Length: 241
Picture 1 (cartoon, one colour):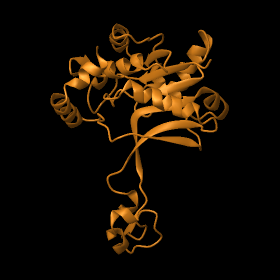
Picture 2: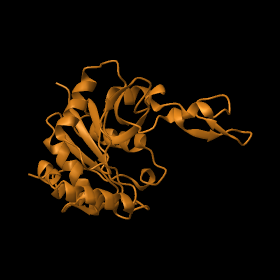
Picture 3: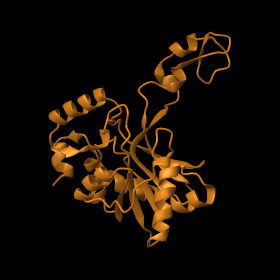
């Protein structure tokens, strides 16, 4: 039987919103929302927080997550990669009981998620054995094909176009392919693929389409998400029962 570990990254060094990951939202620290969703998801065997902070670790343990190690400072900076913290966790697990078959990467900056959607993502990935990973995405409100970049000669040009003629960008949006933003709802990763290819996503990534979701990167984002919660207070009781 396959094993699945939810891995929640929460370093302490956020500069945009200091201590963002433990800031209170609806009466709970931000990391608590992700922990609660993972604890309620039937597809997840263990919920582990990866942090460089003993303070964060104590808070997470009080909310029901495991924090069996602290992440080293050298992989906890602004330029540190997801691959680094994921393989650090896998290395620890390998030496302490064994690696899981799958990692569910859960970003705490996307607090409003349903456990059943996490379960559906895991199920979808397991049903596609050729997929290298699964990433959650939502449709962009405007196709990226209607956006611009600056050509080497200094003029505006349409993205994915070889010319600088802009008028075709005014065509109806229905004429353009739908494009997607990656979001923080849920990613499902294969330990076997990570170990073999030394990458986390690869070239055959299964899209998992979700509605547009609230994500927190700035103080303004926090204000907006608090307002959303005031309008929809039932969100709290759905996770914190």
